[in-house]
Length: 385
Image 1 (cartoon, one colour):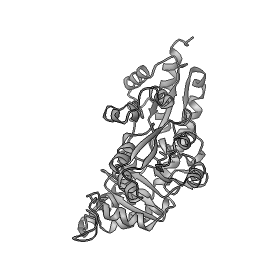
Image 2 (cartoon, helix red, strand yellow):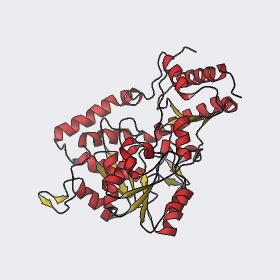
Image 3 (cartoon, rainbow, N blue to C red):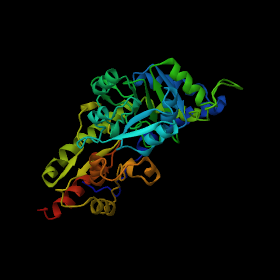
Image 4 (cartoon, rainbow, N blue to C red):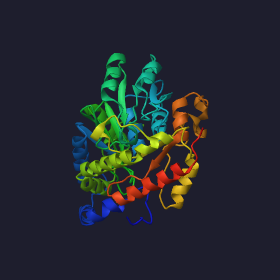
């Protein structure tokens, strides 16, 4: 096998190059129509993406963070309300809650999957709890059955953060269709990514969709008539919608490729379990869409994460950490009053996890090179005693 000279963490050219002619034609069509803001492509993509996710309604917005903020507000979440969310998430989840005016209540995560601990979420519910935000992390969903049981028992709204779960499925339920509403991001490196920023709110209710449409467009339901003082400018760009519509038709195949690559990783890395290196657990089978492929370097692993990452970089293999600092320990949010030790599982994972290269079109040779490099580095270190 010829060693690849470079294995990027993500290689978008593998997706874009085969679609170049289609993408250029779609962008040219928008330019010819001149409907750059809330044009025809936006409406078509909103409908198509919602259908793929099993939701009746979709509203495109400017980013995944805005999808969280405007979606929560449209669901009636605001000042005085508590919103439960996992501490093991990207900071945008927290920012969405804060920008909606609600009070975030963190809970810990599961050690094996990194997903929100639903039992911990249940224990955190109070009379002020209005919503729970399950984050479908790394491409795997939080159990829909557990979430729906929580909602039915306590009357809380389920608002999904599905920014890493385009096309994911678990227990026969698709990401974006579990609760009242869901937020998606179309950041370029997502499973379905734009060539810039973009996001979408999916919902089961007409009123929520109508409210997001107003909020995203200056609080206006029709031109120069503004009914919501909390309106802003956060509209999915027509060019981005046209691009996303082309890519949407390939999403299922791309996700299948990610899942296939993950199975190869799992099998090849299995011998390293005895050395304390283990992949995050997949409880969703083929429904896991592997936005990220994450391993844990446990306390039994003879090589520390920093050194492994440095050695991989020296071998021209990129890697990432998702995420190195849990939300409750971020300097910007010390005012929330949390301390080190409050969420031990998330804090442990933040020191153990490493994301390996994962993207559609990654070759088997590239994956084998990554695995052999990791195995060589781990097995070359003396076993810890």
